[in-house]
Image (cartoon, rainbow, N blue to C red; front, top):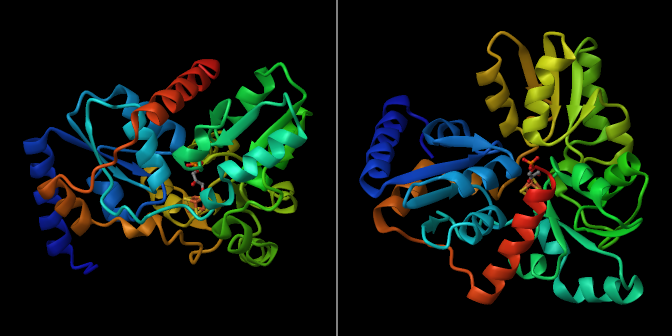
Length: 311
Ligand code: 13P
Ligand code: SF4
C-alpha cells in the first residue's frame, strides 16, 4: 500500500469517521503494520484482544488480526457485527490441529484433558476442554487437576508449558509450529543480532524453539514482552517474535533502543490487513464473521470457563 504520509493520514481520518458513523471499534494485534496499529482503538496480544472483545459496548467490531482471533471476537459477541476485513488472513499454525488428529490423541490418552491454544480454528476449539493463549497457558494448566495434558497445536509452547509446570504435556500433533517463530527467529538470527548488540537483552515468544528460549532473558506472550522491557532494566532490547511488535514497543518506550531479532520475520497473514480493506469493510459492513449456533455456544462456554480460571 502507498506509504505517502498525506494519503495515509487521509485514509486514517476517513476510517475514524466511519467508526463513529458505524459505532465501531477497531481491535488490532501487536503484529499489525504501524498504520493499522495507529488507527486502532485497542492494540494487544491474543488474551487482551479477547478481553477487549468481551468488554466493548460498540455495535461493530473490526478485527485487524488473523481469522481465529476474529472468530473469538464473534463467539464472545453474538449481538454485534464482527468484521474481518480479509477472510483469507488465517494462521498456518492453526492448520496443524483438526478434529481427526484430536480424535487419534484422545483415543490414545483417554481421560486426559485437551487444552487448545487459541491459535486454532473454531472447529478444533469445539473439541477442547480449555482454551489458552501464550499469556495464560502456564497459569491455567498449573491449576488443572491432571498430570497428563494434551496440548496443541504449537509443540514449542507445549514444551515451554511442560518445563514451567512439570506436567506431562503431550503435543498434539507432534510437529505443530509457526513458520515465523521456528524458522525466522533461528539460532543464526539470534547469534547475529546478539553479536552486533552484545549488551542488549533478548526477549522471545514461547513459539520459538526450546533451545532458543533457553538463551533468552525473558520468554512470554507479545504483551508480556512489552511489560518485561520495563522490569528487566537496561536500554537495549531484541524482540524474538514477528517484527510488528517492535513498532508497538518503540511507541511505548521511545527512549529505548528496541529492534526485532529479524526484521524479515513477517507473518504474511497478519499483514494482509491494511487501511484500504479496513475502510472498505466499514463502508460495506462485510465480510462478517458468522459461527453456527451450536459451535458458538459450546466454544463460548469453554472460553468463559478458561478466562474464569485465569482471573
Ligand atoms: P500473542 O498472544 O502472544 O500475541 O501471540 C499470538 C501469535 O499469533 C503468536 O504468533
Ligand atoms: Fe499464526 Fe505464526 Fe502468524 Fe502468529 S505469527 S498468527 S502463530 S502464523
